[in-house]
Image 1 (cartoon, one colour):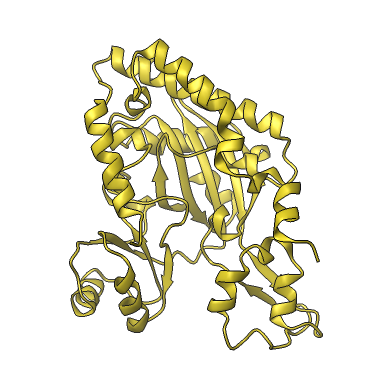
Image 2: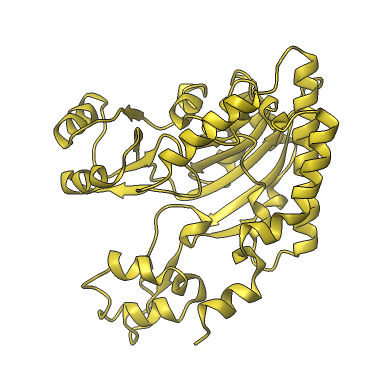
Length: 341
């Protein structure tokens, strides 16, 4: 059995953020000089706080999307207690199971499936900031679709599609759940979390061909496998997301995290958007296992070049870069909201 260190060493998708992004830090510095602003990225999406780099309200962004494309979602303002939250759930037409997530956050931080009132009580014991209660979208396919439109062009394009494969194991009729988890690299990396979630079930033998979904949240940090879906990109897909995106005020650049029933529904716009992430999002298809690091860095360079060009054009059209003072305030708010201390 390989150690976690060797698993991560072999696959760059697990490497620390700073190592993979280091060449981009240098390029970012060059773009700062060209734009004369440390926060040039903030003008890439003038309708979203900081362009969606950090500090934006997920709820405010969702509410910019036409209603037919989003699940039922309510915002819980702190302080809140279990009774008031349950009342808002009922009045909002929601029912368990649900998804709870911070209104400000990233990388799956504090995103939880909530099955009952007891789970609600446990959740609010930990979270200190406003959070969302969202309808659980049970559609089988989850994608991240990256859209780019230059302000001086009438049409935009889909530039990246990532397909998400939830972390799971399949029984062989002999191995226990614990053995199955520890024998799978991606699951083994999540062991400290999984042993708590499945406490009391770890020694159960899983029937042959029975699949156990270990994590239901589609985030790379939680063990979800990201698969390159570039082959799905065509004119119809770009047209669909062009039609949706043009209805979102001040949005030009970002990733739709969504669920749908089938590929045809994705092309036809029959999907539900759980989150819309602005310029802070990545073209996540680069995390496909085995995707060449050199190619991934090329994709990220192009990604940042697009941010710069879109922001510059928006400024020409009257938008402005967020001041450094305001950016620092948004960052402090972001850090406060994403800590459990």
